Length: 354
Image (cartoon, rainbow, N blue to C red; front, side):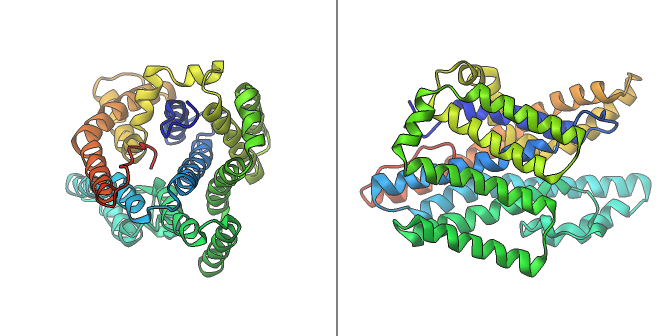
């Protein structure tokens, strides 16, 4: 079980991450809700999954098929991302034609170059908040491009890959500056990747997580970090939360029969987790639709009703996007990557994670 490339428990983790992320964008949220922690969990999950699967591929096949990896990533990320940009552009145009207010259109025009090049984490303040949450995708895409290449070039000397990646990140910080968001993003990816490197090279450490149900302990640690963040906001609580979530991810990966892992593998949570990327991209559209619907129905538009309506709408919209665009393009990427590997005499990869 623990050698499987697909871990449904991680989709369960994603479900809770995206709920927090949606909560963060609901107006009027109470003081004890900090939805920004959703991305603090997403980053180590990506770092762990990508690194572990690439290291396993290198161990079993003798090398990393870099082209196949990039094909899968491109068809997994890019089509729905650009469709989302087009949807937000149409929404900005609609606002302009309905209200004659060009503010959103001007913001989108300013942000456009940053958005289409996956550099939204560097967008200026005058670019506004239209599709503002794309900043996380900018960080993750750089990770997807740079880190596998470093592992590929390092062959079996993973320490070289780590040093090279740190040099690249340092260069990015030196050239473009840094802020708490960038620190949180690269730290989260780094701690997830670091856990994968450590456990891939240490069977003894991996056996600890296989034999000791550490999931609930790591969950308690995560809750403690969250409480600390609420009581005394600091970037260090965010970093601590990423570290504790990485332990949770590792625990449910290696021990999928512990009670927390069985809970995260429940079918509704797993299904909702498969929609996470589409929900993340389209959530603000769903929130605006929810607010408009509640207003038309003369229903109470408080934090809770907006969230429940927006989350339900985001699931429906995300499912439609998943069926119509996301899954078909994922399948194309897998076929292209699989056909290439088959032509080389290898086995095609069906790993849903990469």
